[in-house]
Image 1: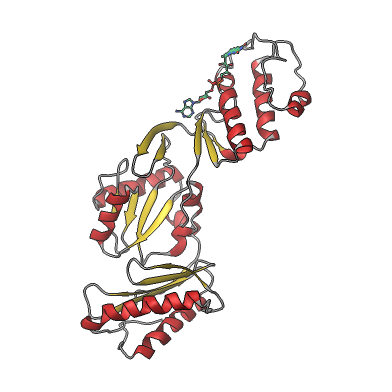
Image 2: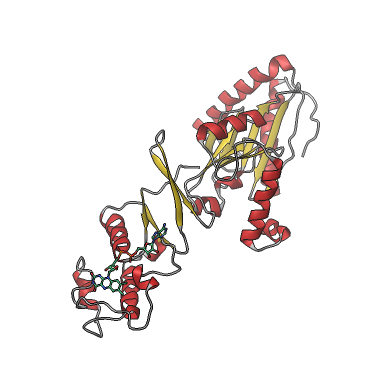
Length: 336
Ligand SMILES: Cc1cc2nc3c(=O)[nH]c(=O)nc-3n(C[C@H](O)[C@H](O)[C@H](O)COP(=O)(O)OP(=O)(O)OC[C@H]3O[C@@H](n4cnc5c(N)ncnc54)[C@H](O)[C@@H]3O)c2cc1C
């Protein structure tokens, strides 16, 4: 997943926050986002709604001057406008400049942490949302991490990393990732969710928080997951002394297939990940993986397709065809 971050975070949707958003977005074309703890626009004009709340500067002066059209388009009804009219005016300005799309309401910024290695800020909200986080996942994991809307909307980055709980744990620590998921079930949560260990009780607590925040049953959450077709982990026999060199050959072979734009089930390879064997993926999110088993004389082959079961099978057939030609693999423990 391409790293997606905000260039600028603005806090507060009052007169000044709105103007900053306008300037940074429209004038400097920056990727910015505004967080406001109130559920609506207005700043102090949202919070102060007592009877008679109004401004004591004349309306023609208590407004924005940066855009003539906007200035002329808005007609104040009173010389000293009241709270509802000022809040309405701010909503009008935000609508005119499409600023709502860059604002999250009910979002109280509770913590900002600077990472001096990456020169980035991590923003945490008191409602539990954390933006710009990294997730480390086992290279055998589903490709849905790359298309997940929640991760995308929260500008998170997913890193596919070497299989094995110690590899994932180290990477979570090194990247200061929010969480790491090893496919066999070791979940690592870093602060503020955990202490970096694969703590089963904490994992269960996080699932309880998820259920609590979503206010849905587990079965409903599972039902909402997008459909994808993944093979089991298939292990064709391969001698211990040959498996790593064979995987190195596969890395070279799949780089050639990508460079020569050779199609697999009508798609060209879009991306290669070589942290642990070779994982190649396509535009539609389908992928295949070949790696050497760390504890058995075998390779590990996995394929997945969110498009169709048939595509998952076709990718496997392609891999198997190449492996068979080498003459170095034997029987699979299981096959699709
Ligand atoms: C009744 C009244 C009359 C006034 N009359 C005048 C006047 O006549 N002339 C004049 O010049 N000024 C007047 N003011 C002053 C007014 O405060 C300013 O004019 C102006 O509206 C301030 O805008 P702002 O964007 O700087 O701050 P605010 O409007 O205070 O906006 C700050 C926003 O930041 C949000 N926020 C703060 N912390 C966080 C966080 N951690 N996470 C997320 N969101 C956060 C708050 O919820 C708030 O909405 C008046 C104020 C009041 C209340």
